[in-house]
Image 1 (cartoon, rainbow, N blue to C red):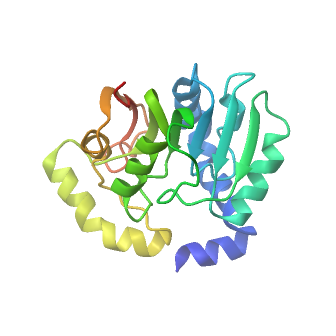
Image 2: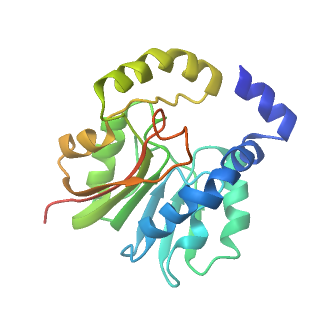
Length: 213
């Protein structure tokens, strides 16, 4: 697969991820991360922390458990965690089967991850379980385009994209709807400005929701 070849060329999945997102992070995604994480109530569970690109944006003093299944990403995240103002613990884990007691967290954060998990409804159910009543779910995700014909184009491109990308990413998942169907109350869905040419196939949103008290 293309991604396997690129990982070999760049030295692994974490360096590849950094290279792909670096240009976007300097414009839209990095600003969106700051908005997403501002005031996130602690303790926080971040699901799919990747190489820890967002860790620097957590408020000082926050207690963050950063869950990441890939060893290469965990190593990169732990290196980053040493130099951020939050108290970060990087752990291995699976979004479909969280190894935490019910009601363990005041907020759950998911960034550019629900597009790739095999069973997003299971991951959201697990997020609901580990949140306290009234706890916050904060998402930064690329989602299905609101215009039907673009959504159908995303569906058509998905098989090729998944093969090239190699991690199970899907372009057209209706994540805000999935959040609502999982029992959360959706408080806000805000579009993230993206570079020209990206927003029609990769629309990105910030979703804020909460578990009913």
